[in-house]
Image (tube, rainbow, N blue to C red; front, side, top):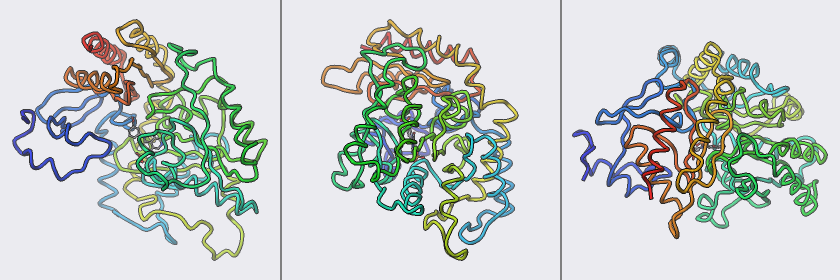
Length: 445
Ligand code: PXG
């Protein structure tokens, strides 16, 4: 059954690892094991080369196994493998925070470190609620997310998130006082739009309706992904994010951008908020921060938010929140080395230079069987397939599997194939990804 397995790993040995977001039984019956990575490629345990069309999981923006990161991590492990950041500090944590503020959107010059996107989201939600309390508006505790949003798997992120499979099992264990905006995916109006859809900015007005329902004085923050990734790449209609910003400003509601996938060059600027020229109050990041090498996340805050906490007696802790591994020295070293690579190789803007070529390539898939939409922005692309009757997701899963067999790794979510290659990708590799996907779609009933 497990012909692909290396002799070192028997069937039984696959049982103990309860795999995340995975069909465990299906996977373990026919595993797909990655054993090595370099640059744009993975190699399977049986030695097959696979072109990485998703930067691991939207995180390996500078390509795999970067020597500079390996060296920085190794050096840090030998110098000081751990140091606490509760009532103590270590220099590279401060260095990293300063470096991050240099590429951050205007005014976002305070940085709180976490270990993942989920932790960044929960941190940002807690900061938003605590901020209002600190400025004397403690009744503002409501949070507003969006349908189809993904903000990780903590109770906070799950509650503001809007993907039904991630929510339905957990029933009433959601945060109270959460509401959701309508999502912005509208294939009827916007199918095959290149870049941002022109239709749909008015969907932001729904925030006014929720404000009228709950009253602004009860609402702490609105959280959205500038571009939704996990739900299958949903783009903001032109003008939509600006309108959200205006409405939030009018009602003193904080705007949180979840840039866990859009951050660190994915859309042609360091952050999507810069690409779309809309600055949030809080911004959550992770993934590309360390090129996926060591778990780390960061929440960026406008200075006014940090300043609101800096009151009361000087010996009092201003925010009762943090993680043992906040600003872990090894993660800091990995992040600094990653930022050096991004700067040296111009990777934070390379997606903009490749965007035209990428757009033309992914839109060449229009017209293939079952393709009902193609979406793109920066170095993000998605192809939506018509679901098989009564079997949602099955067709796209088959496409994902066949692409992998033919040496290209893409990502499947529902009936969407999503792509987000490392930002070092070369034009001929763009062509390879799209040609492989096209041939697989043609061969998939
Ligand atoms: N926010 C956003 C916007 C994300 O995309 C998270 C938070 C959570 O991050 P952590 O590090 O806790 O996983 C994410 C994660 C996919 C896929 O479907 C996307 C993510 C994770 C796994 C798969 O392509 N994004």
